[in-house]
Length: 166
Image (tube, rainbow, N blue to C red):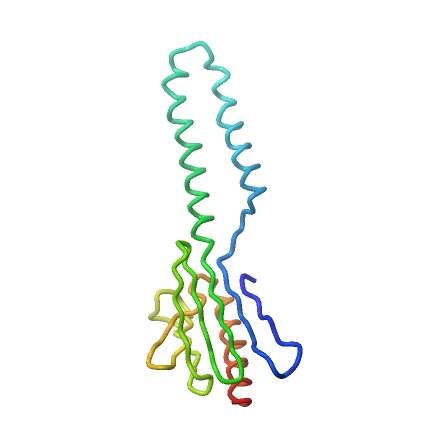
């Protein structure tokens, strides 16, 4: 799952939740994919060597490879999104780091923090938000629907444990 709970070794300590978008193609797979794509595109060109048609097709095929590379790189840049939720004995702290490096934070007393799920009506199905301190912030909108459902149950449990200590 593209999120991970870091639980404290003892009852005294903060619970940390790190969330990140799923990356299905690792960098090594990216290199192999681009190599295989380039080879597969160039195979039909061997029959056209020495003809004017080769020079007519070559810019389009090269452009295809360049656009494919650009799209996958854009996906990797968007995948640098990171959310960190820290729940300690008295505070809930959420930090969201965008792919561009912008950092947004939200803090709330753990007693007043509430997890909400919207089965419909949000930007995605089963949209999770945290409410408290006069604000409502989203959490894990990039996760799959099943992951958000599971996360919601785990999040409510973590907030309940923190409230019991507060």
